[in-house]
Amino acid sequence: DNGWHKSLSKILAYLEEYPSLQANIEKPDNLEDYIDNDKGYTLYNILHVLIDNVIQHSEAKSVAFKMNINDNQLNASITDDGKGFDHSIEKEGIGLRSVRERINKLKGKISFRSAENQGTDISLSIPLII
Image 1 (cartoon, helix red, strand yellow):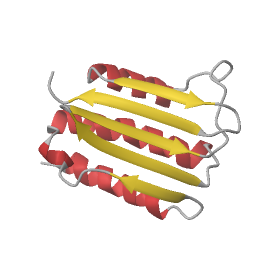
Image 2 (cartoon, rainbow, N blue to C red; image 1 turned 30 degrees about the vertical axis):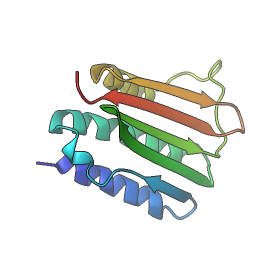
Image 3 (cartoon, rainbow, N blue to C red; image 1 turned 60 degrees about the vertical axis):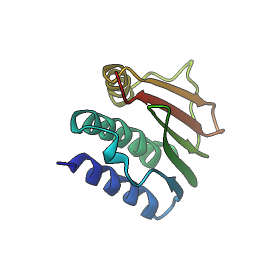
Image 4 (tube, rainbow, N blue to C red; image 1 turned 90 degrees about the vertical axis):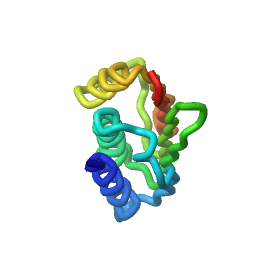
């Protein structure tokens, strides 16, 4: 069952087709060969929240989604040119809190770089062998 992979493909297609957003998407064709279902659904849930945040909150005109597998690690980044946010004053909502919890469950790392009116760059890495 690779339902998570189909769901990920759908959310990426939605991002690509979103009317007011120019999207550039790069991901491995054989992603499901590297990730089991349990990890895959968790990864899908993480990416769904992050992509939804771009669509709902960023006011971005363009977004780049890049994913690769290198040295038994999945790396992904989401970069937009939206309004960004100031980490020092923004409270982390339920969505980002759940993303951090899921990243921890996968023994991964995530970083956010953002500044007001300067877009957001999110990078995450997840080990494929634990």
